[in-house]
Amino acid sequence: MRIGFGYDVHQFSPNRKLWLGGIIIPSDKGLLGHSDADVLIHALCDALLGAVAMRDIGYHFPDTKGNEYEGIDSKILLRRVMQMLRESGYELGNCDCTVCAQAPKLNPYIPQMQACLADVMGVAPSQINIKATTTEHLGFVGREEGISAYAVVLITKNG
Image (cartoon, rainbow, N blue to C red; front, side):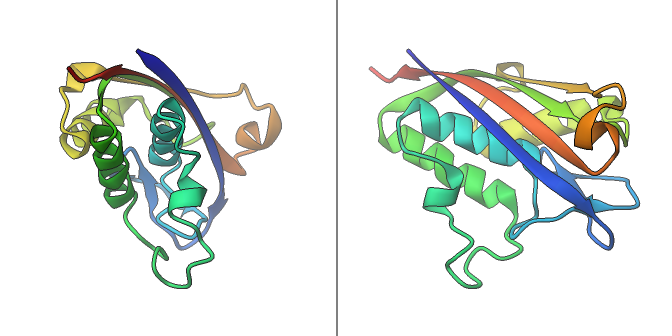
């Protein structure tokens, strides 16, 4: 067994959709990033890559490669990371994720995010836990300047 940890943060930006956990969350602003800026998926990718000692999402999908990853759906990146994980002989045991957002309220969307991520990753929804919290109006999250996400994964060696 191996564990991995991931963290990501993106600032809010007007005129963008808010992608979290592979779904669009109703909001008057989205997150700024080279891709769709899905902070939850990015943290999850980093956790998975870290668990197999394959560096991080920026190493594999850099924003310096011109337009190759510009605006890309982060679900595509997560599928590729899961493929790398499986090619290395590992499978997901479970993941535990926390999204920190003062607004919008995310709890109503957690089952939909969980189902989406499970489908993308080829695992059971019961292997994915997502929690949402605020920062009680403290820091950049509390001032509603952006969203952060944390992810921890447990992976097991196949065979």
